[in-house]
Image (tube, rainbow, N blue to C red):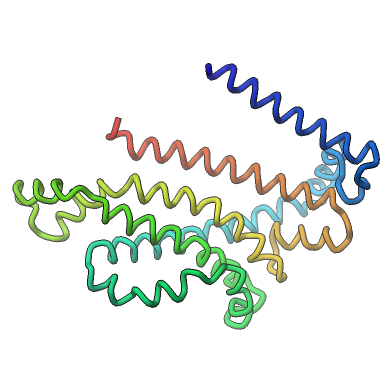
Amino acid sequence: MTRLKSAALSAFGFAAFLIVWELVPRLGFVPPSILPPPSALPQAFWREVTSGIWFSALLTSLRHYMAGLALGCALGVGLGILTGLWRPVEATLAWVVRTLRPIPGLAWVPFAILWFGIDPAAAIFIISTGVFWISYFAALGAVRSVDRELLELADAFGYRRADRKLIKVILPAATPGILTGVRTALGQAWMAVVAAEIFGVPGLGQRMMQASNLLASDIVVIYMGTMAALYGLIDAGFVALQSWLLRWKR
């Protein structure tokens, strides 16, 4: 299938989705107050933009998102590399990981409120917790999958010190796997933003909950679309960055 044909099919599918969405409330299958038609969204979006609420919520959530993502990925990748390099560290943390890993991010909300209060720090904590494990296991797997022949080759060329071997061999070889985990974390962090803000921290999630309580479903859809569009832009930017960082593989 050519790229042009694939793009045309994608556009057709999305247009069909919008048409069906428009018809469902207009034909009375679902009340417009519950599912607003797409044609009602531009006016609602314009009201949010002109009031300044949209920009304020967007910038606030982006700050939470970037801080939580950076903190969670930094800790996850760092600990994942450390665990992947030294088996004793993995053995020491084994039961800690098995205990904490299954706990979903929402379960930490009560503790976030107790520890940080209704504060941006609580939102950053929840977001970083959501992305930590993804980054950790991606880094751990990437380090463990480094070809042992590369390490033997490094020894042959005089890179016997652990720090030099890490910088010259292990990290470059593990980078593709680590970046794949970070890309997955980008999406997980966006999902965590809503969970982090629904309990009162300002941002997109809080605005969605306010609109939901007022039965303003069109506003809820506006912010759902905002989050989807932002994630698309961030993911596209990260893919471009990933391609540039891994240009040596071409």
